[in-house]
Amino acid sequence: MLGWEYPPHITGGLGTACEGLTMALARGGIDISFVVPALLGGERAPHMTLIDSREGPSRALRKEGSGVSLSSEIAKSHIKTLFGCYARQEELEIGFNELSQRLMDAQVTEIEEAEEVEDEESLTFKKAPHGSRYGGNMMDEVYGFSQRVAQLATKLDFDLIHAHDWMTYPAGVVASRLTGKPLVTHVHSLEYDRSGQTVHPTIHGIERLGIESSGAVIAVSAYTRSVVIDQHPVEGERVFVVHNGVSGKYRRSFRRRTEKKNRGKTVLFLGRITFQKGPDYLVEAASRVIRHIPEVKFIIAGTGDMLPRLVGRVNDLGLQAHFDFPGFLSGSDVERIMRQSDLYVMPSVSEPFGISALEAISCDTPCLISKQSGVGEVLRHALKVDFWDVDRMADLMINALLYPSMRYEMVRNASREAQRLRWGPAAHRTVEVYRSVLG
Image 1 (cartoon, rainbow, N blue to C red):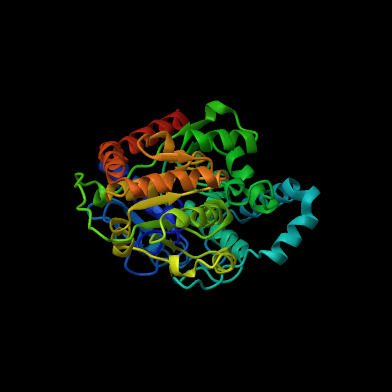
Image 2 (image 1 turned 90 degrees about the horizontal axis):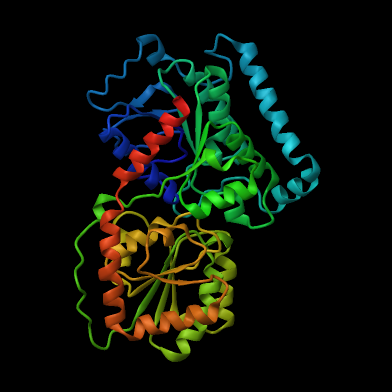
């Protein structure tokens, strides 16, 4: 299995989903070697073997009693260069040449736009306030990872390759071609979700290559499945829906809150401050809510490229006193702020799933989500609105904040749904997908 991050070092929901799914797969007897670009310290994965691609098997956190046997020769090897430890150099080189050519073909008509986008938006990971751990150029990281994984693939014993999101697709494609083992690509989010119609052609091309090269594609919702089929030439029967679960630490029995008198209400947004997540629509709706509930406070937690513009818009509206921007939150801070909030709002423009809504419900906090969110397929007891309809969004927030009984009924019913949304069924469905590609 190929991933880009693993808890506690996460920048979004991808690492959290990988942790939940792998734990459930391991409980079902699946033996997993999970490869990440780098181990950063503090990772705990006793249910599987977690491998640092920069060091190879020489730096792996092995699960107890895993039965994974790595020879001393392999354990001492450090994977540093493309051909250093690989016997069939010609085949590997051909594989990468073909990969590069396919990517170029995918964007040949839009190469000038791609260069402009890279100049303006850049694919370079910068050190974010919350400590992003990938420096340098994004594409260099992606291809460097694929080179190291290609070598690891010839040394590990496995039946199939499971790649999470576009950053790992080149690694999965090349490893599959070199070993003949089938590839399963897992779509947690598409470039279309992040950028709308102005997709970055290089990333879009990588997604297409990974999906075309897969024996099966896993989508985190029926909504995402439809976007995958619309955006990429793939047969519908090869795209399977596997809904995410919610972590055990959030699955708790519903407890009715004690309403404190004379306490102002709090609305929470938690996520990346980007186009995809729709925080700008929330700000516009908030300006309408404040006219009716002057004591309301909006917390916009997260970081992203839209943050300066969002703060500027709040200032232009003269609403500084009603907004807090605490930055990126993780761990216990997330649970604390969810439990303290009266309403969680996820106004995403395009949200493949939206696991944070389940986490909020599990913290006894009612949710308002966009109709463009995959989680709405499994969470019926939530308020739902089109992301662009800020008047309707404001009306729903006002009603939820003014009527405690409404919030109580929403959470009581939704918490029952969250109790059923476990990772076990997701793992069972994933194993079915594995069997379909293994024949």
